[in-house]
Amino acid sequence: MVRNEQDIIEPFVRHNLQFVDAMVVLDHGSVDDTPALLERLAAETGRLSVGRVGGFGFTQAAVTNGLIHAVQRVFRADFVIALDADEFLRVADGTALRAALGCIAPGDAGLIAWQTFLPARWPALGSHDAPRGMRRRRRTESPGHSKVVLRLDGGEAADWTVDRGNHWARHAARDTVAHHALTDLRLIHVPIRSVEQATAKTALGWLSRLAADPAVRQGEYSKQYRLIFDRIAAGAPIGPRDLRTLSLTYAQDIPTGAIRDRVEWRYQRSLSDGRPLPAVTLLARAWEQALLAPSAPCQDIASVVFAPPLARVARSVRPEAPPLDSAGAWRPQTPVPLRRKRMGSGDLSPAESRGRASGLS
Figure 1 (cartoon, rainbow, N blue to C red):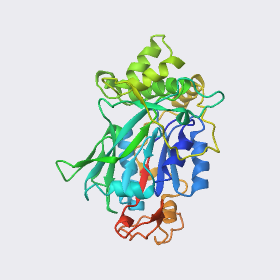
Figure 2 (cartoon, rainbow, N blue to C red; figure 1 turned 180 degrees about the vertical axis):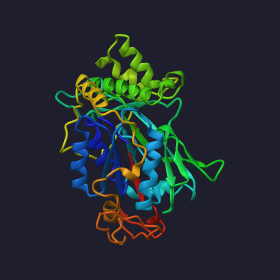
Figure 3 (tube, rainbow, N blue to C red; figure 1 turned 45 degrees about the horizontal axis):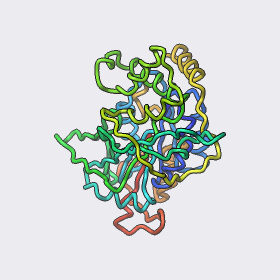
Figure 4 (cartoon, one colour; figure 1 turned 90 degrees about the vertical axis):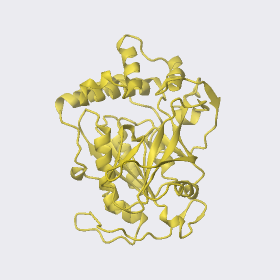
């Protein structure tokens, strides 16, 4: 689920589609160019399906779980990876991704650890592509955060739920679920990218969480949003010199400094230049939208219209699927055998062909 990510959404899709078979992105009431960019990327790639939900309040877990259940009924993926728009898979190629995911035992879950990167101290003149300028990351993550991967092997996901933030998974029929640390994979995490982006992200992020749960201030959930929001509200706006400090302390108890690390990015922009919408403009649009069209956050994913339809994208990576109906929908009731497909640098072996992965955001 993404919201107001026009500066990063094109790199997010282009980079991660180098590794997974398909992506499904749910836009949560963006008021910047995010929906238009996603529409163009879906038309261009053929492996991205986009839905849109409203509501100002932020109820990530309920919406994300509904999305996972709906998507898996159609895709019958072997692996489902839950990502945010500021997270990028760090792996050599699709074959290496599937080999790493194969370490998850059937019916278990995997964890991909964050590597949080810092914005450049002095961005290149005229460049707004923040990720490409990042040369340092946090030395360690304390506490360490990971994103969850479900190994479903083509089965239903109705008994699975992921916790808020997509950091952990649960199964209705089991007291515990084994979570395997995927040490051959990492997630490049770029939560802080520019003054305008960081200001809008934390202000809207905190207010939307407060709208969904007025008691959130008394807990630890979304503490990183609350702390930065309180600073802005106290009259201390974010400045360029604050960005690296914010990156070092974001969701951390003990900042540990930074080390050099160069990323091999797998994207080229053609639809965006990396500029976020100015924070004041974005806040004005979002607040007007909330007042003019007040509504509860959508939690019934069955009512969401995806474009292109989920079944059409599923067939693009699995042509042997049954024909689409007149409405462009397909809801298979049993798993469909997967074909072999060339991924990355070589053909998949019969065992590897089970490693079909879908990305959700």
